[in-house]
Length: 314
Image (cartoon, rainbow, N blue to C red; front, side, top):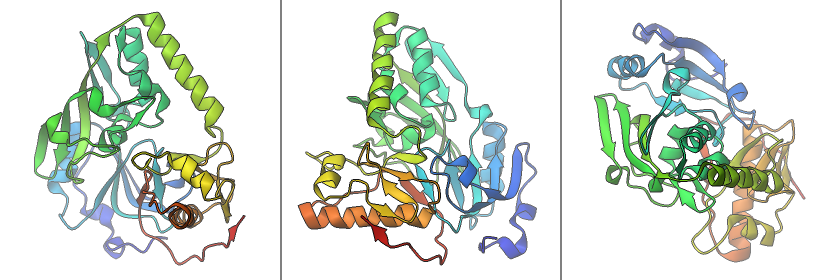
């Protein structure tokens, strides 16, 4: 049971009347790709944008709100997440095509968006087929791969905050490498993106190439959070990790992937503390060996518990 700030007061009783699904002490390990982490004090799946806006407008300002998507690029700590965790689902997963534009809810998967663009003969979205997760997280971190990133295709973003709806232009997003400079308290709900008319066959072929490349180089069949560290300028994170001798490094049930050094994996018994501790050990060794500090690409959220960390194994 999580010892959260509002637990004794039963946070659920302080919530406004909402149409979406609400659960107390909801297991988040089932919702993240790492398959680890403690519970959400409250897990809320809003029915639609208006339902989400109602929560944010009426929720006490001292109650934290954390947003998760499909759980592909996050690590939830073992102590869980206090406050309200918002998971955007089907009510935010719509994708429509209008000429050379695609309008998508932020709960839509990147693969779905790429597929809709392909079917409409729009190029520029192929890279999304190689990025696990949903649109919301991709916007937040300016996700990119295979020579492209979100900044290349985004025209506008709709968001909701405690003060109400907000519309953001591409310049307002403050995109930089694997980063957007938008208030963390704003929740992205939809985005307008623009592609370029192209050949269906060429687009489909490129997406197939991306899927083949991912399968050959990444541990897709093992619980993982995806790419772990941001590539430092002028370097590739996996090469630095290899140079520091960290391939297959272990901590408890967590391990640096043998297939791709910039992926941490759960071998079956890992805790979030194992994974975070292993990542910090990798950072320490890379710094010691190369003088370069790796920065986390995976978003680490929640509170740690008092469980001891396993010894590092090589």
